[in-house]
Image 1 (cartoon, one colour):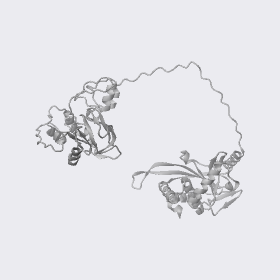
Image 2: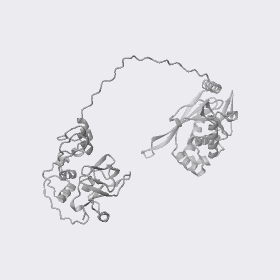
Image 3: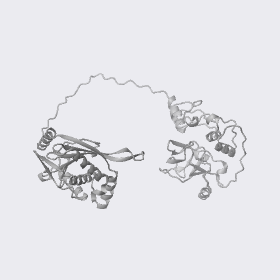
Image 4: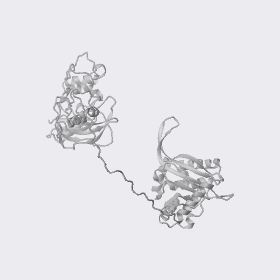
Length: 476
């Protein structure tokens, strides 16, 4: 019968319970040689290369590379001689039983499997080992099963205790390691316990690892230990620039304000100088809104943006707070029953604010269509006077530019403007004291203190926050 051996999920460390095949370096049916890297296995702490300890063929790949973890001892593949048939491999897989000890089969770490690992070979009763040495139960079982003399083994555990890995190391045959295209590497003995990457780095730099004390688990020589032995490269002298730096002319390009820019500049200057601004800021959770938007867009067949939902929420909040839905004309305040919400749009001719009329009465699909049409007209420079005349409130959103928060200037004669920042994932404390992450946006309300008191603005923001965090209410 052909020699067939299991390849199982190895166990690296006491705390390891599962691992993930990150990448296979050989394909099913490929032959490999001793010392060749077979695959990369990831745990929650490390990524390790599994190196072949004997020549064979990957007859069956049972677990492809993926993000799915598999428990220690799980059968990942089957190695066999080239002459092994598919029927023999199938019979071996059907008869295979994972180790009950929770420690990976020796073949799982790339070592040749013990003779008892083949499917049909009867196993002789292992010889009992009587010793006064301190040794772990798993290490003792392995030593008895493989007939390993434990007396010469120097234990790497606490107080010299012999560990499972110590027995595995004692079972490894002495071998010479060489790498194509690199400097010759000194003969590896049992005293050299290094990772494959550390061995390659040592070969590349011509370093002898004999006698090196490793800082890895159980004294293993790691990449860091090898790099510490590599001499630092000498810095080459920088180029000498003999020609002194000469500044180039930095003359401005003068662009007088066009008609639109003049109007915008005049109105903003007037607003900032004559309107007593004060600011109210609040953070709002939007995870539910993001989820509802995706579903609603699919169900309704629309492409409503987060800003469209904010315009809808602003309109509904203004209808409930008419003392914020106002315009200021001289010494008089004009209050409106419905919300005409202006949206700030950056057009080729400057900042413009087309208006979504009676946003509180519109369905979200109607708001999405209206804002899309207004933005397209603004980009084309075709906004009419009717598109921009009036407005009882403004929304300025810079979240799409990565701005987290800002304060906007009121657009007179309106009494307030809402500045909207970007969506950010932030950590929040739950009622039970645990931490969780959620998506939040920063809202800043700029208010004309001549017409709107602080309490009125705060109540409006409170209502707006409630509507956004309960987005189903926007369809009421």
